[in-house]
Image 1 (cartoon, rainbow, N blue to C red):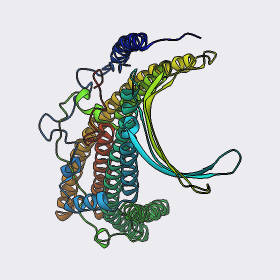
Image 2: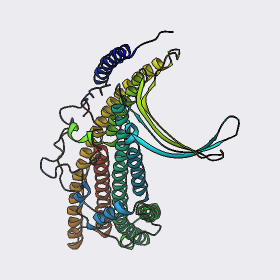
Image 3: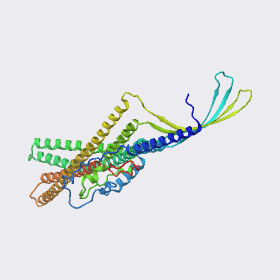
Image 4: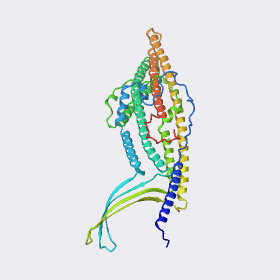
Length: 477
């Protein structure tokens, strides 16, 4: 047995301390350099829109209150109520609160903890029982990038909940607007179809009169009667749409009863001239799917950081203070024990499992970056297509308005010709029918332009609330 005197023991202790200091210095240096960086995300967005056929003057894009372009106070009130009463928005809000609570809990993952415990133990021969009361504390260090990676995962989870809640709001606002536009368009269409039925009925009366005076044929009268029946059938269609959209709005407002204000027909909302002059990079990147893909990259980087940290030892501190009291011995005695020291978990043999996990996490991070690129490309494509649709529907509205103006002029001419005796009532009825049908086409064109406008803003996305801090480390956008 090797015996050491006090002097040799002191020298050995000093040597051990120096070695420990050098090892700790190397450890901290390794920790400082062993951080997994979040890769730069590519910007796959064009410099400007491909379609620029919208009017040169008008409203600029407004992601916050785009529906106000319709200038309809009833619609504004419905959307404001839906923002508070919609059940899906409330569900998303509760899930956001849950995500924040979980993040708050996980924030202390690498903080010291303190536990109080009591337990009873006996000696092996069961002659004495001890009541032990103690405090213990553990503190795991987040070395080798583990703490940074864990923070990324926790914050990205909260940000995903924030983005999901914002996406639900965008969807609900779009659905409220769409159903309201279709409801008002159906009510306006019902009025026009009533005019069409009246014009067809007038044609039937004139055809019957011409048949009775032998100036017309039975075929002409039957044809007029068939067109009247068809017009009457088409006139019943808007009522179904009104019922469906009113009930859909009730659901979006979190109730089962449609709002009474929707029962009375009102003017169909009309959009002003609008120019979208910002590039997709300024608008499309607010889309929830793109922001979600961005946070998935951050989370994947965090998971890779954890996997890489698992290749290295885990270091920490453990402290315990225990008071032990004999309960069944012939004499009572109290003992106190205080222990403090480092904890080390050192992986030695795992047959390459941890390295394979690192490889899997690296592939997952690369896939997340590719998914982000795909989300940006698809978002730009959807916005470009929606903008082309909006420009096309805007042109159709202008064409329908011009057609209506021409038919109204023709109806005035037919009335004038009939008044001076150069035309008959059948020509006037036909001209009035053409006006009613033109109004119907303008109604449909205005509805389709409004729906294209809604689809365009849904493609743009909406304003995302501020995300949790430090969830976008250097290298993200």
